[in-house]
Length: 240
Image (tube, rainbow, N blue to C red; front, top):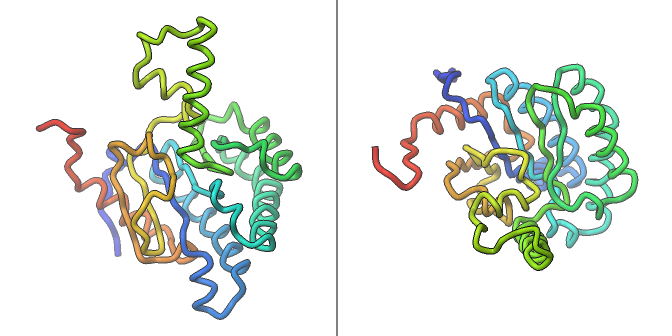
C-alpha cells in the first residue's frame, strides 16, 4: 500500500523499540540468534528509508540495562552482532553521511564493542546526514539517576545555582542532551509499553504500536507509522 506522506511534516526524530526477534525466530523454529541476525537486516532497511524521508535522528533501543538478565549465550550473541555490525557497516554509513552516536553506559560494554563504538563515532562525528543513535546498556531510570547525581555534585561545588534548575537544566545532564526529544516512538511485536526507554524525553511523543515482529518490519510499515503520525493532532497540552 502506498501512503501519501508529506515530506515537509516528517518527524525529525524517530525512536524505535525493536521488539520481537526471539518470537519471530520461534515462529520459524529457529534459534533466537537467527532472529537477532534478521533484526540487523531490518536496521539497514529502516535506516535507508528514514534517510529517504528526511528523518534527522533515528534512535534504536539496541540493548537495555535489563537485557543483562538474559542467558549469557544470548547476551554474547547480541554483543558480537553489535561489534560485527559496526565493524562491517561503519565505512558504508560514513560514505552515506550518517553520523553514529550512542546513549547509555557504553563503558560497561565488552571491550571489543566499546572499541568499535569509539571508532564509529570518531569516523562519522562530522557527518551532517541522519544521526543513527544507538541506545546501548541504556535505561531511562539509570540515566535520570545519573543526571540527578551530577546536578547535586555541581550544586554543592557552586557550578550550578539550585534556584536556576529547570527542565532545560535537567536535559543538559541526560545522555540524550545532544538530540531533540523523539516526535514518534515505534514499538514492534505487539507490546505497548516503554520498557524504561526515554521516559523523560517521551513526554509529548506520539506512540505507534504494531503486532509485526521487528525482523518483518519494513519500509512500508515505517511509512504507515509516519502517515499515522502525520494525521494526529499534536497539541502539547494546549488547544488549537
